[in-house]
Structures are given as C-alpha cells and as structure tokens.
Image (cartoon, rainbow over all chains, first blue to last red; front, side, top):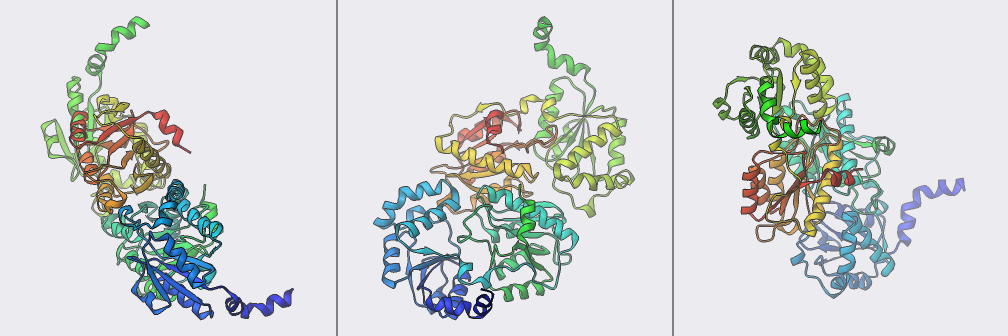
Length: 304
Length: 304
C-alpha cells in the first residue's frame, strides 16, 4: 500500500489523464477557462471548449472549440454527445443574462419550470440544479476546475514578499466574518475591510466593481499607495457546491485592489482559484501587497 | 390612574415641554435636524442648535445656534453648560471624518484612548461610548430623535397608494434578511433585493451611493420606470442603541430609489425616521412607488 502510493505519486496525473474521458470545458469570461484548457492538455487529456457567446475570450479558438448561446440547451447536449465528452467543467464568469435575449431552444424551454424552482434557492441552487440535470438526467460527470488542474487552487500561506501586519490580520478577520455572513445567505463571496471597518460588501456587482467603489471612498477611511491599508477577502459560501463557482482572483483583481489602496488579498487555501499564481504574485509584489491563502480551520473558527 | 391618563393625553406634549429642560440639537447633515428643531419649538420647548461644520445645513441659522468642529469636545461641553442645555439629541448624517483634520482640542485628545476602545466595538460601540461619556461623566441626558418628535417615526403599514405585490413582499423578505445579517455585524442598515436576489448591500458608502449602484446594474436584473421591481429595506441593526443612528429615509431616498427602478421602500415601523412623511409619500405616489412600515414582529420572524 505504502509502496503503491509512493510509486503512484509522480505518475499520477499522467496515468489518470491518459485514461480520463474527453473533457468539455464550458467557458465563461476571464483567463481561467484557458488556464484549465492548457493544464488539461499538458496532462495529455483530450478536451473540447464550448465558449459562451458574449462571455468567453476569443483565445478559446486556439483549442478544439465551438461557440454557443447560453439558452441553447438542446444544442449544448447535442454537442456534448457528438464530441463524446463524458466529463464537463463549467468555468469563468457569466453575467446574469437578460431573460429576453437568451434565445431559448425547446430543451431549454421545457427545462424552465425546473430552472425557476432551482433559482428559488439562489445562485447556488441554480448551479446545483444544473449539475443534477447534467448528471442524473444525462449521465455526464460534472467536475470542479480544481479537480482538473489543482495547480489553480490557492495554496495555504503567504505567496508574496509582503506579509500581513497585525492590523492586516484584524482586517482579514473583519472582512472574513462579513463575507461568511453574506455567503450564508448566498448573496456574495467578497468583502473589503480597513481598520476593522467593513468598507464594502459584494452582491451582484462583482469584485471589480466593489473594488472600484472602495477606490472612490475618501482616503481618510482607507489606505493609499503611500500607506496601503485594508484587505479584500473572498471566501466560498458556507455549504456551497465546491465544484461550481469557487471564488476567483487574478491579476486584474490585484490591480483593482491596488487602486483601492488595499494592503492585500486573502482567500481560502484550497477553496479559491487563482488564474495564474506566478503572475498574481508578481503583480502583488510589484505593488507591495500581500496575497494569502487562509487555512480552512481559521475560517471555520470565524463562522457562526 | 385611568382618569389621569385620559386627562393627560391631549395636554401631554405641551405640559411636558413647558417643563422640559433646554434641548441641544447636535446637527449633522440632511433635513432631520431642522425637522426636530421645528417639532421641539412647536411643543414650546427651548432649543439650541450646535451645527457640525461641513455637515449641517445652513438653515440651522434660522434657530438659536452655533457652529462647531467635530473634534472640539471641550468647546462642545462648554457650549452645553453655557447654554444650560440638560438634554441632547444627536441627529443627521456625518461622514467618517479625516482624523488628520479633526482639529482635536485638549478634552478630545484626552478622550482619544476611550474613543479608540469604543471604536473596537464598531459604529454602535462608538455611539454608545459617546452617550456614556455625556451621560455618566457629564450628567447630560441623551435623547433619541423620536423621543423629541415621534411624528418623525415611520408608522406601521402602507403610506402610499401603491401596495406591495406578492413579488414585492418576497423581495422585502430577501432584502430584510440581508439587512439583518449585515446589521448583526454592525456593518450597515440597508439592502436592495429584486426578484429574490440581493442586488446591493450597504456598508460605509451610504444608502444614496448604494442606490446609484443599483441604477447602474443592467436593466435585465432590476426594474425600470416602465415596470418597477425590487425593494430598498432599511432596518435598525439588531441590538443597536435606538436613541442613536436610527435608519432614515427622505425625499432624496425616494428619488434615488426611483432612478434605480425600484418598486418601493420598506422600513421598520417605529424603528426608522422619515424626514417629512407627507413629502416622502407625495414623492413616492408621484412615481408609482410604495413606502411601507414593517411590523417589528414581522422583522423578528426573519432574524436568526
């Protein structure tokens, strides 16, 4: 047993991947779909990208791909079957779509009553419902992005040269408590605190917009480039389906946080995705900011 | 006993006011300080307004008044004593001041360690600490705005022609739950929900800025002037000192909510101040919106 584990370790990703079924990457916005595509290909895994129109980056066309409207559920299922994809990963941001412009096909229209029921349980309910539909009704296996490429998961500890000060640690706790409170209501994943005061909470506007708001607050209650203060914390919602919608940060998050005068960013270790850890670390170091992966035990101790 | 109550009812405000001690109205921004000044004068009560520089409206000069910097604590105490004010009401908005520009006097500087300790308990801790300082250390009596002019308290029930629809009622509950969750952490008092989704949460940016943000969201996820949807809810923070910092709405709140496409506004009956009920009702009716005072029992049933 011990020997098997030891021998298996290095070969693990190659050997599973070689036997892994073809993977459909359903691509929303941002750099993560591309990062996962590259990671999966590097593992020797066969992939097919399905880019959501209006969301996915043009660069998905560097991989085997097609484009799809978000309401074309029948077409989506047909593509999955035609391409022989057995596993699916849903990744990248999607703006809440305009219901009038979804372009629903018959399969989607028949699904609407169930979608409505899922939506009553909020964002997370919608994603869980969709996962159930794909898995139980159609036999696909939904995988989390981190199951495909665990190199995208935030590691535990400090990534940067700068370390959080005592004040930063207090701000992390203040923002984390706030993020957990709104997460418990399935409202959002992010909060910004500075000097123990919560400056902003994320609902549907998204992290970038929240950070833009903080940058617009008077400098007297936040940090600045001279003296960085305050922290962005992004956490999974308590009890959320972790294969779907893990909190994500990237270089743009660091840049926005920098403009807001923040000292750093904290996410849950193994509970958040970082699009490109090296680039994020480099960007944070260049601005004298920290990025930290919080131990899950620390976050649990803050929960109610 | 019964007779005394019955006889006392009509004369109550006049007779108490005639014997009421002189009232200091410490005036921040917005229309409420003026409304309270008028109400107190109408009761025949002697008043003195202390306008906070940079916050209070110029119109306070229509009453016996002086102006003061926010950091001039010794001067503040001297004014109260000189004017013979025994009771104090703190009312109106104050932006979180720039610590470098407070212009602290010696009394304020000596008070700083205690202020720092109060601030560790958040906004509410700061107000409670200040109340204790004025009452226990200096013998003044701090009064809530609603104790002076209960006509400013939101009544229970619907003020407007328009009534909340079933969907509006659901949005009220969604937003109220969110407001209670952030209130419990002493973060803020307001939330906006539309179609059961929380669109925005209020932290330090204030209600107007939150409503401006909602107005900037895509129309597909919020209401519009054609079909108003969504609700602003403002509630007292669970366990907050109710003499201080009651949630407040006014005509500007209605106007901002209208621009955000909202169907209405809900506050806690007897737990929120309305600067001018008639003007607010008129403004809401003109835009086809509702304003409702929620029964405290209904809000309690939503709490955790």
